[in-house]
Length: 267
DNA sequence: CTAATCACCTGAAGGC
DNA sequence: TGCCTTCAGGTGATTA
Image (cartoon, rainbow, N blue to C red; front, side, top):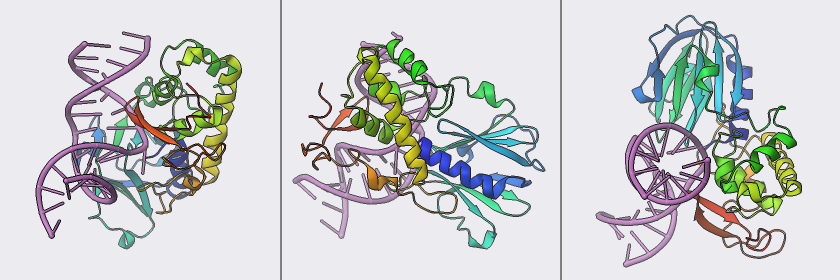
């Protein structure tokens, strides 16, 4: 479900609701949703600050970290009053503060909350965030030039840059006129720079729109995003391309539903 | 190194 | 109505 803009929206909302709150207890109703990598006590720890890297949320606690990945259907729902929460509605983890409540709701149970002592080493396999300032156009172009992967799989991999998912990858490739199966190292530097700018522009615009809601995504207040109103290819199979009127095609590629305009994105 | 498939889960939607 | 298949904002392991 959530890609970089949705996770960023969740992070921003959580910053305004749970920073400074003290954990009273944590309960995992579905044990696999909470990976308590050690039995360190979380009780009494305070959420000091919140970071994000790609699709990972990082809650910096007094002495350790909670790292959260929402995967496909995960939601973090915040309540000032416990009486407003429905504990039976696919709730997998309960985080109770001395004042306030954070519920991890996850229909498909793919999401995870990891309790770790070293956030950096836990995330070593995750590449720099797609909006990180150190990911410059030149860094991006060089990593493309060094890879023989198709560009769709490259952007989805999280290894070179993190945060891009199926929606924003399809949208960024359309905006750049790049065929999804094109090899990363075959994209000319001019075109690669264009892809970089489109990718960041699309991500930032979606953050402005509080992310995209297709079905499950909600922010911690239960609100949907509105960025889905501006998709050019995702979910538009058979509808006319907004640029050239050619019907948008959907194929299975890199293991995912892949939307593109056969005319604007020539092989 | 890259690519493809399965696994982890549940629910919605479409075909018959 | 009901059954069966396919698909879904993701990723990690395993197999070619």
